[in-house]
Length: 136
Image 1 (cartoon, helix red, strand yellow):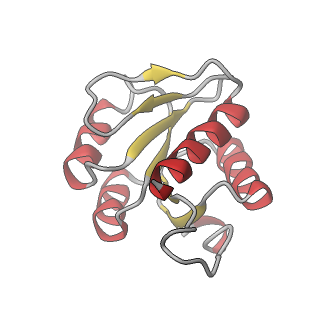
Image 2 (image 1 turned 45 degrees about the horizontal axis):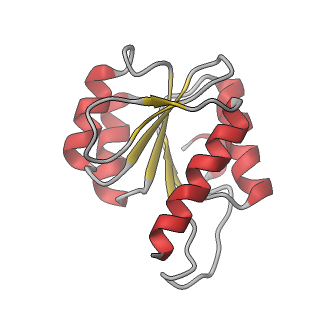
C-alpha cells in the first residue's frame, strides 16, 4: 500500500462517519495532493490505496468504499470503471486527471458530470456531499 496506509483514522459512529475513500491508480503528485487534502480537511477516510486495476477491483469488493478516486479521464479508465461499478455499485467514481477539473460517475448513472470547481475544491465538495448523504 503506497504511503503507509490511511491518511486519517477516526473513531466515529456510523451516523458521524466520513466517506470511506479508496485510492486507485493516480499520478504521484495527484496522489500526494489527494492524501494531503483528505488528511488536512477531514473530508474522508482513506480505507485503501492500490496502484493496479485488478488490485483496485479486489479492494473495492472487500472494503465497500463510498468513493473511489482514479487518475485519468473516464474514457481512459472505462474498463476499470465498469469493473468497479460491478463490484461496488454504490460507490461514486471520482476521476482526477492531472488538469484542473474532476469528473464524477454517481451510483446508478451511466454518464459522468464534470465539476466546475478546481480539482481540490471539487473533490472536497464531492466528499462533503457524500458525507451529507450518509447522514440522511
